[in-house]
Length: 200
Image 1 (cartoon, rainbow, N blue to C red):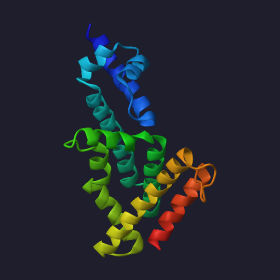
Image 2: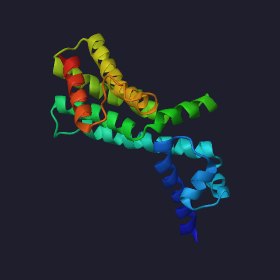
Image 3: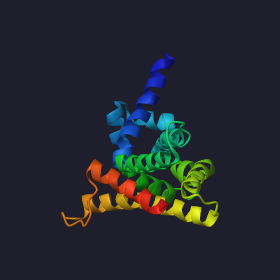
């Protein structure tokens, strides 16, 4: 008897994960239809839609954290390749799930006390930050914390640039973009040039 209960809750969660990463905010009706459950089930298992969306945001943050951590702690990559693969994975994740930024904005606007897991687990995560800073210091052969911190910030800013560029290209530009990074090859070349220019 308990298995269908777990399956129903899991179906709701997996449906939310699938739709929210691409679309962002969704209605309870859309979620219920996609999961094949009634609307009352969502409230029964999660209390309300916002609680479910917070769980989805935590899921995405854990997935990205695990991916980033596995790259940065890998014995198979050189320091340069760790940094390159970390930057590529972060960019690709955000591009693959474009609605996550909007979701975070909506959740924090409606609940001022909510601390987004994605921000906490990725951008403000001291362990990841220290690993990345050590890799940067190793590559540029410097222990100057200020210089290393600036380069760390430059890389993060450089990763966000193409994401903003893509949002503008897809929603506002009528083919008038100076630079388009819509192809995988162009995107990967951009990330490599970004890392190279910052580490030189």
